[in-house]
Amino acid sequence: MMKISVTFRNTEDEGWQREYVDERMKKLNKHIDAPTDVHVVLTVEKFRNVAEINITTNGLNIIGKEESKDMHLAIDNAVEKIERQLKKHKEKIRLHKSGGLKEEGEEPEALPVEAEDAVESKIIETRKIILKPMSLDDAVLEMDSTNNRFVVYRNASSENVNVIYRRDDGGYLLIETNS
Image 1 (cartoon, rainbow, N blue to C red):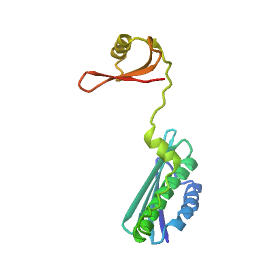
Image 2 (cartoon, rainbow, N blue to C red; image 1 turned 30 degrees about the vertical axis):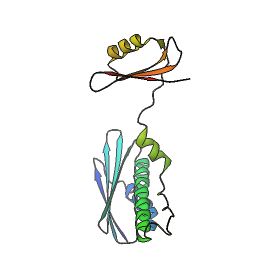
Image 3 (cartoon, helix red, strand yellow; image 1 turned 135 degrees about the vertical axis):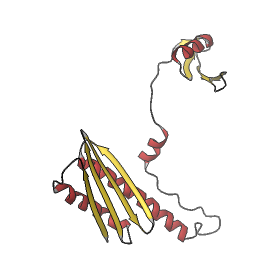
Image 4 (cartoon, rainbow, N blue to C red; image 1 turned 60 degrees about the vertical axis):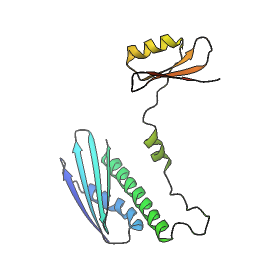
């Protein structure tokens, strides 16, 4: 049984919002076994719509907060985030109750990891660069003039890709590749 409360900040209850939240929270019922308190905060700030969902059940507290230009999308994304956390928690409990290893030498099943989460948590930014042919001295000069910690360049004499990196102690590290 879910007890759902909805709070509105900088917006009025238009009716559809509460119904939409109730409808989306039904999706989570299959992952929850015990009585649950759900507190949903819907906030509107200029062009930002924020949906924050806080679920408390059996000492477990799960929070999902998402921001979007559309309130429907913010609610959907927050519910999906909560659902992933509930699945992960349920799998963790299942593995713990089964004793981890089923037979000697058998590895426990890996927890399912969503591909988008794995990519988002590792790659923050992607930059494309044009490899300029230059000497080591030119690469150091360019790094110093741009205040970058590293420069990727093509060595003018060997045509190999090199990386020069400024260390914390002020020295430089040269990484040479063999193409």
